Amino acid sequence: MKKYDSQYDMMTKQPVESLILKLGLPTTISMLVTSIYNMADSYFVGQINTSASGATGIVLGLMAILQAIGFMFGHGAGSIISRKLGAKDIESARKFSATSFYSALIAGTFILILAMTFLTPLMKLLGSTDTILPYAKTYASCILFAAPALVSSCVMNNILRYEGRAFFAMIGLTSGGIINIFLDALFMQYMGMGILGAGLATAISQYISWSILLSMFLRKKTQSSFALSYVRFDLETVGDIVTTGLPSLARQGLASISTMLLNNTAGNYGDAAIAAMSIVNRISMFIFSVALGIGQGFQPVAGFNFGAGKYSRVKKGFFFTLTFGSILLGIAAVTVYMNAGAFIQVFRDDPKVIEIGIIAMHAQCISLFFVPFQVCNNMMFQSIGYKFNATLLSTLRNGVCFIPALLILSYIFGLFGIQIAQAVADITTFFICIPFTISFFLKLPEDKTET
Image (tube, rainbow, N blue to C red; front, side):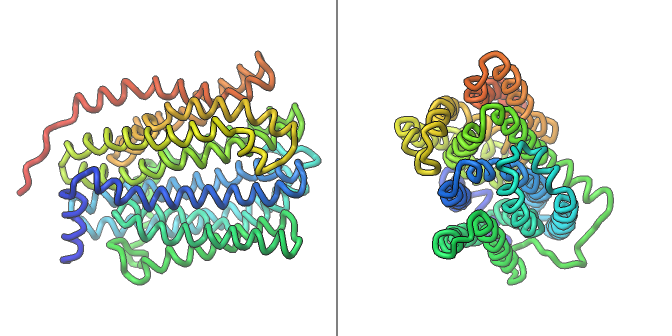
């Protein structure tokens, strides 16, 4: 029990700034490594041809579906767990951790079976052209094989973070990412396996990462547990996890729909347009990972302290995360803006891809300055259990704002509208978030007195 009290003291008494950096740095590294190995796939596949490069963009929509389910269970359980631990209710926390883990395993297996049964129509739905289809099916088959591991890894990763054990989560994710990059080079460069090699590298690395994350729980490094005795597949427990995780499902689910629409819209301008937007989105996601990583370091701090009644620490953490994330993201965005063509060329040395990609990259770099504020809002509301606010705001960037922007701007401006749609959505989302933030902090009560 002593180590649990020590963890509680760290989460509720350590200076907020140093605590967020302590938890956010491992998470940021994890996010960056994950983005790097996603870009490694794009890099190696891009050496094949433009159609193969476009396939990674198609399958990105499938991965978003898997992550949507995983983050729903992971963020849903993690948010509840952090508040339960903040209230020193360890038994309830274990009930939610075990239930979410096995729910994710079952869901991942179900998606594997269903998607493999309808693989060709699924790839077409996600925006594949006839020339991209063979590459997309091969790559997607490997990703689906790893679906149970990918979905349940999202749960383990988030539980570790929400417990304040981000370092353990970093070990699992970065190990898998480094192995993925090594296997990409081995299978594709030295064994000549083409896009199949990229898919196998991702699948194998996912299972290795899954095993490392699982070992943290089996070795009792956590307060949470996956013991079957704690599993509760009842409506109240599963319902609480799902409704709390709904913002993540909405955010990632809409990301999948948006990717599908983006691919279908860009497909009107050829495989080069799909490949260009895919590459730009991966580079943007790499930069976005900085804000996301720091924001995820703030999540357990917000949940723990809100559960403990230390509301001033939630407010202080929000503004520190916003300031620090904005500075880091701004530096990264300016760097990429100044070298947009060179970055895109690394992944596909095709003049048409580079030409289309530069405009989109410039627009997204500008709009990234508006992203940290929306990330902080979303992370905070989900962590403290404000389900309506979190769900609504999570639908904006990739859905409510992006989808109309894409459809309207592409209709009016053609390809240029597609290139600037994400930037317009980001700026719109920023302004919608402002009243929610002001209202929340005006109503935030005084800290509870410890007994």
